[in-house]
Length: 301
Image (cartoon, rainbow, N blue to C red; front, side, top):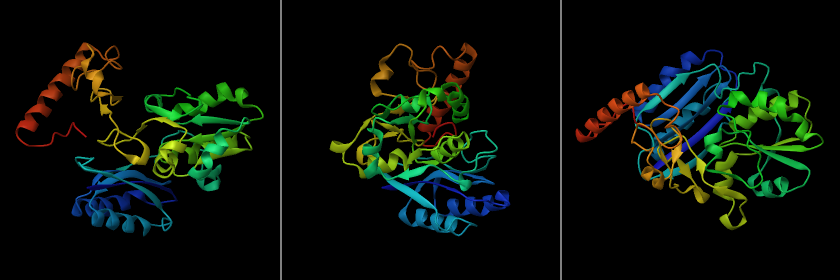
């Protein structure tokens, strides 16, 4: 079994570039796969590997400036969730595009998974899903509002257009692992919203801790690795990935007329030009040839 560790931590790195190579080399030494993002505001990512390898990387990360109390969430996969390891330098570890947003200056009230149901079923609470539309499409909490954003950077504009809907309401927000809510709740506080809450540990922690029979979650949770989705108990879900648009699809979606492996699915068929599809077909041909040689193609997860 592979240990999958999802993590983030906001701190202030003076020189994230200097942290990149030692971290990448450590991950490679221990056979770790996945992606870690480094920025002046901290670290974010998901990695997978052996127990010893994951522990070594977590120990290293917690030794970085301001990261002693870095938390992570774990799940299991019986196949390698990632083909390679990347450590990238970014402007933000989760892109919102709001320079005045600073989670270190304050966030909403954390709500433990065990207390989440009671909060979101209260009539004076509005529940907002801060994830992208394709993530919301395969699962969300009962009654949650979907902003229908294609990227997190669209959330501030959505709020500006819709804020009057939430007059005199408490706002409860959630996302996959909690990182987007660190920024979105700080943003709302800066907009003058007084009662802001967010799910501690995100959906992943909720699905891990709350029994299915007590859950208000409906569907699956999209994850950014080869499992594609997980459900209650963090068991791997039924979804696969369309490698053309990187959206989740179900096995039966492969029977649709619009589906062509690596080229299109029913969600992106009309979004891609014929030139795009020809490029994707060539890429898919190279993926298939790599499989025949027993190799992993760089275009796959």
